[in-house]
Image 1 (cartoon, rainbow over the protein chains, first blue to last red):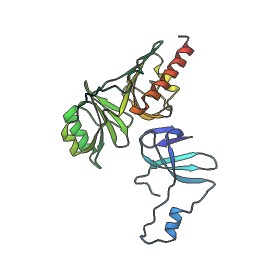
Image 2 (cartoon, rainbow over the protein chains, first blue to last red):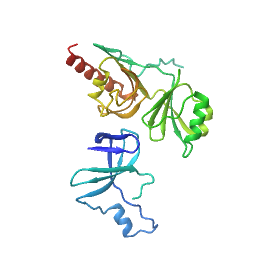
Image 3 (cartoon, rainbow over the protein chains, first blue to last red):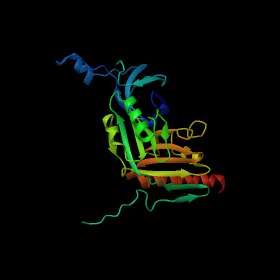
Image 4 (tube, rainbow over the protein chains, first blue to last red):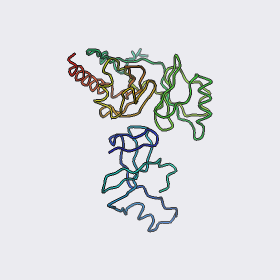
Length: 85
Length: 183
């Protein structure tokens, strides 16, 4: 598995650390179902998924990686800063 | 007050010479990390050019003059090697003294790329990784900064605490490469 880091170029998986699902942070200040979902509830999709990875052994940037859990294809990566969740 | 004797991070570990390959320790002046303040990359580049004659390096690249080298060191991050940084740089960047934090090794000789190919998950052949190119990556399990400094020479910067591991890994790989060549 290789991940196309937008800064370093395509690199081996062992340079990256998996962080978790890339979810939009709820905008409301009050506790609600949105926060439950954000903190606890996860999809387990067979297909395309978006996760946060950190290029820990490389440039250090946090990335949103789009990949397919069925085919194992890595479809793309963008910087988490400024990414649309 | 006690007089402390400074020792190099790789003292007693190098030099290692095997066939045509050599692993030695580099001794630089100061090492300073530079992180531009948000939006100040351009101003920092101009200040660096004026103070040290160095341009801000693009990702995976380094710039150098006679006595100084500036290595891309990560996302919005570069390492100034050699001179004490000009005070004016502080206006545009966060500066941190890293002089004692890193071990600087020089791997040189015919087959240096083959040694790295056994340890580093990056293509370091000259066709892909030219003199002046740099990468943050892994050497074995240790995080390193790797820069090609010549046709068959590389600068490897690793955490000082990992000096013994790095030399051990490199020495093993140097032995293997030399054995394959029948040296």
